[in-house]
Every structure is written in C-alpha cells, then in structure tokens.
Image (tube, rainbow, N blue to C red; front, side, top):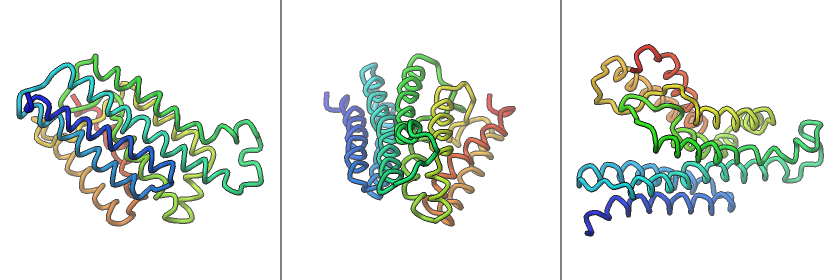
Amino acid sequence: MIKRQIPNLLTLANLLCGTLIIINAFQFQFVNVIWLAAAALIFDFLDGTAARLLKVSSPMGKELDSMADMVSFGVAPALVLYCYWENELFNGAGQSLTGLPFIDDMLPFFPLLIAVFAGYRLAKFNINEQSNDYFSGLPTPALALACFALPLAAEQYEWSNIIFSYPAFIILFSLLGGILLVSNVKLFSLKIGSKNKPLNVLRVALLVVCVALLLSLHFVGAFLCLLVYIVFSLSAQKIIV
C-alpha cells in the first residue's frame, strides 16, 4: 500500500512547490521562485520514474500529475509574471505606457492567459497518445521555466529590463507562449537514449548551448534557452518522427 503511494507523494511535493512559488511571487521573492521551480521540476521527473520502477502506475496518478503540473507549470508561472509586471509597470509610474489607458491597465493581466492555455494543453496531453521522441506543442515546464527566470533576467541588465518590460513584449510573449502550448508543432523531447540518432545529436547540441548560455548570461541565458529549444526543434522537423 505504501509503495503505491510513493509516486503520488512525489507528485504532491511538486504541487506544494507550485503553491509556494505563488506565495513567493506575491512577496517578490523571485530567487526563491527559481529554487522552488527547480524542486518542482525534479519532483515532476521523479514521480513518473518512481511509478515505472515500482510498476504502480494508475489512472489516479495520471490525473494527480496533471493537477500538480497545472499549479506548478500553469498557474504559478502566470502569477509570477503578473506580480512582476504589475509591480514593475505601476510602481510609481506616472505616465501612460502605450498611450491607451485601457491597454495600460490590462498589461499585467496578459500573462494570466498562460494559465488558461496550460490548462487546455494538459487536458489535451491526457487524452492523446504521446511519442517518446517529441511533444505536440510546447511542454508546459519549458515555458514555465522561462517565465520563472524572466523577472531576474529583467533585473540583470538595463537593456534586458527595457526589453522584458516593453508592452509589446509582454503581450506577444503571453500570447505566443500560450498558443505554442496548444499548437501541433513538434518539439523534440530530451530523452537522449532514443533510437533516433540524429535527434540524439541535436539533443546533446541543445544541452551544450543551454549550459553555455547559463554560464555566460545566467538568468538571461535561462530565458534564452526557451528560444534556442524552439529554434532547434523547428529546424529539425524532418528528423522528428
């Protein structure tokens, strides 16, 4: 009985991390957000691994996993961006950002669309057969990690603060990120041990580039990893099968 609950406990740990991310976002503790996001990602990986190793996969575990992912990689990243941009745009601001007061007021709410698209994507993921080599649409953790990194990336450089707080960027990132979640675009998974050797080479190349970005640009690099992943995947459509 206890053995069957181990994967579920790991899933619930993921959900708890997501809840703590939300609390820290409202307290503007974005460094804590990064650590909690890393923990959520680890628990998300471990629950499925534990279920396979212990051979205790169940329909309840699958549903619980989706609910945890919705909190940690759907609602949490949306609220992190909402909290950051609401504070960044309106803390002492005395002039219009776009020349349109209605759009100004709506800007911080645009990232909440990410939670809406994530919910649809996770439901779609549950009812469709999945390939081991690719995802149909952008995985929620990939977009979520970029969202978690964005506040610290924006504060890292003056130019990054200007770009990541620009109204057009806020709107486009929220909309395009959400649309990619529910799209049918194939983005390769990171399971290097698959039988698709050209794809394995591309995965290794992606990991090398991402490590280089993290080491050289830190949080900005973490955000750019999402763009690199998308570009690599789009350039490899012929070998993703």
